[in-house]
Figure (spheres, rainbow, N blue to C red):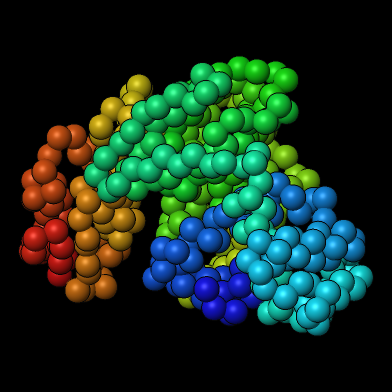
Length: 353
């Protein structure tokens, strides 16, 4: 990993990255699967540990100690034989990183050592590829269904006081109740805390919004950049965290996300089908959805790649339900409702023009 990658990651985790740096980080991870995996590990370390370290010198000593442990294992020079990597200084309620790149490398090396050498953090990962789903039980009795192109990571053995998992993509959770051991889902833009309930979470890296929809029970949602503000959902409610950008021309950092509270969506009035969870019944539902957003969902649903050769086609709107159709049949049905586009299928690539 490059020093620039480390620098952007640490600024992103600390909430200090610029919109341009957020875009740069997304680009790096989209091009490099290893970088994406590293980022997710560092984010998990940060989520679990930064409250103990931020705004005091404990962070500095912790990093130095971790580096020293790593050096002893690898046989490289001890930390006291090299120049200090960073100096923690007070400033506006948080640490000011005096040597940004070196500080980033130090903290992330610390995070890496923590994850790979801590006996309490043996992680289990469940994956789904595009075009597939998976249902499984966690050790506590919680039932999880992963949608296509998703990943769930969690400790092989939950600790005594909490049950924490890390989601990328979409999943439906039916959480086994345990008032003494809250269940917490971490996503890129929000954390969700529950005691026992059923709900859907959607958090794909390239989507503009992350959302949680509650079917029964209650959940507590916190946005990544503002953990002190709690949003309590009741049954049938949904919280959506969207990227906010007044110019709509550039990406934004996590501190710019805007949460909104709404209700879950029925496909039609007096209908019983909930759009947010229709994927559980193998139905791809969409209502007045622009083509570029629908195309992303179809890519995951059918395990294909969709490319637009005409930008104007991206804004076409569609409403409908796909259930059991092949991708060719789905495209044919869409072209019947909106004849303003053409397409061709080239193996697993679809070109819209």
